[in-house]
Length: 193
Image (cartoon, rainbow, N blue to C red; front, side):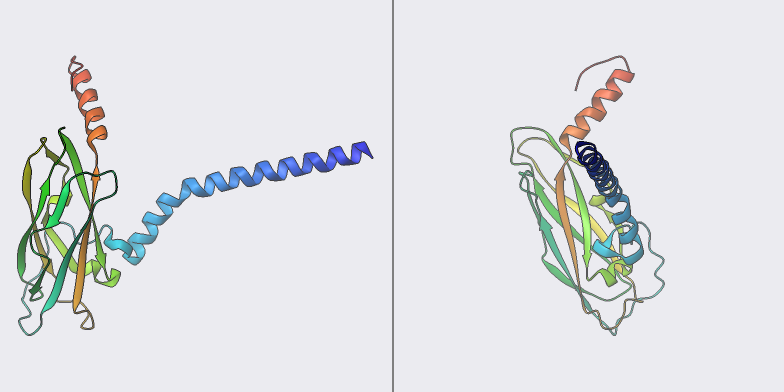
């Protein structure tokens, strides 16, 4: 009887260990799977419309409302907002706008903006030709800046889409930047930030 209970216990331990390893593997694979899913579906506007756009004509018979939204995670102390909340554009025309950022802290910081487009169906048709989101944004303590965005709405945007929302979340990358700088300085024989 004791031997039978020990066998059942061993099987249970093996099953639980296998389940724990499988859950860890699945959790580890979620990030790349999510990226592939976003690439295929356009969810969150990931990886679409970056760089020069090959738009050859402007559709003056149609206007699309483009809204700008900003989000700061709880640990990001900057003031970050669009200078214009929305604008009406003709598909195919280059449009410029800016976003305001202020480092309200007493420390130098580096931030990175991550874009998202809603509805996701519109993501492939909103081309960010030149965007502050392409690069990290360093700001000294107490300073502010206006960051440029040049974009084009593709004339091929489906007719039923009349409003596009371009949202940016701003993340603090200061610690990552300090580690990168420390590594570069160490490669040069220095150890300063």
